[in-house]
Length: 463
Image 1 (spheres, helix red, strand yellow):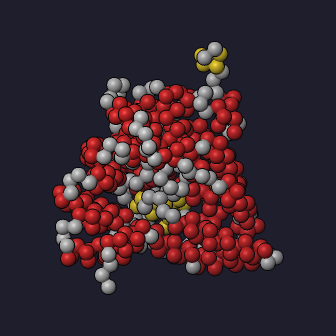
Image 2 (tube, rainbow, N blue to C red):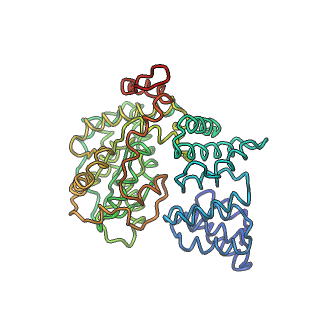
Image 3 (tube, rainbow, N blue to C red):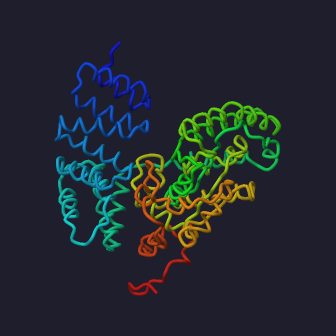
């Protein structure tokens, strides 16, 4: 039965990309110049990492309907992922020129540019913010765009105020109770339980390297460095381990409620190793299909929650934890309008609580794993790149390759917020960035017990 465009779109939104693609192609077989079907086929191809085909489809849609702002915005997102930043900038600009209240396009454009004072972009944003009856979502995007302009041009207080309003208007809620509940569940992973686990790998073949840490801490940079090695494939941020983690935790909780001993927990983990872990490896290896590599990188930063599970189920995995100064990390999160999954980051209090819990959990894993966990500091990587990169490669049993020092020349799609940074040599401007916002961050520093690091302010002057 032939599907309608709306039915295909519902499959698309449900993540059933193969079925949606088939449906879109069936529509185009009958009406080859249906611009919406071409546009949506392009998006579903991009979701499956077929970016070149995606661009061809959306370019054809734009030829047929050149004034469709969404087409320009969405092709800009694909160009951004591929590192074609000039093309992305042009398409974002075209999108908000066609649709002056396209808040998301202003924000996308702002991420492509390092602004100089006097750039007329800010006047366009301010003009839109003065328009009545804009939705909170549109206003949020506009404030994030204005914040980026004022951050680039050194007007720190105005930048922070725009980011504050952008975060507030985003309307994201964070369930602290659910978050705390997950942390309590992780007490299952204690030394006695871990001693019951086999250290034998499930099978031969490429194995995972987990790069973990807080978002905006340097995980994308570490992945890009590793992916520049001939024996490593970078798969980006995968959600599969979170799904495995939730399933196995649910099983352990059921055993706990039934009064089972730790031997039963160990058996439950052994069973999960045979089933869920094998499925995870199959999905991971599919990401690097056709690549002759030893390692595949999964850099979802929040996998730090499941390191006990990872070590139990995937003993051959490597785990790399990257740390960055807490205030720099949190500031960068607060200034990033995450599309999904980081709802704690839209409020400084929630951000501080989440960061504090992250530190506690990493302390637990550190005690549990010892030398099996490689930890590096972002600041060390910036200051001593060759030394730290050599250490990274040695931990993975890889020979040194000079391409890892020139990681910014590696041509691969990057979907995270660090799409721009990983295409440049390592730079120092992200270090101690928080100092420009010290007064704004005082409540956060108090939660993190870092007030002693803040400068003392006397009659408006920092000393």
